[in-house]
Amino acid sequence: MATLLLIHGPNLNLLGVRDAQLYGAKTLRDIEALVTDAAEKLGHKIAAFQSNHEGAIIDFLQKESPNARGIIINPGALTHYSYALHDALRDTKLPAIEVHLSDIISREPWRQVSVTSPACIAQISGKKEQGYIEALGVLHKNMQN
Ligand code: DQA
View: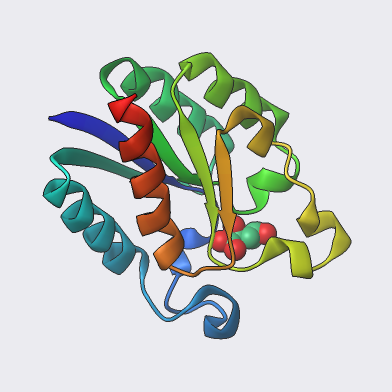
């Protein structure tokens, strides 16, 4: 049974309260449960983590990645400026998928830029919680190769 890391960045602990038009109505716990159930059906285990602090996410990646096979990450606003998170993702040497609930490409110009996606094998944006299920499918397929 492979472990996959499911990581959420700043403000995503407030899903369900944040703008539902953009981010959907599901809470973070709903999303974590959805992904955990879907992963179990594929024979994988999810280790979920959320923090509002960049360094805490990097610490989690450094500690947990040696025991994991892949990463699903929604870095929140860190997406747009955290070179430190980019480097931490790359240093794990694991396949990572960047997920955004909203469609970042159709939003503000600064939000269209992702500095973390070059450290990921794919970016899925604008599909609300379904994006995570898609990401799981991509990682699962990647692990078969
Ligand atoms: C987000 C998009 C980011 O720009 C924003 O800062 C978030 C959520 C998304 O899931 O659509 O917090 O990552």
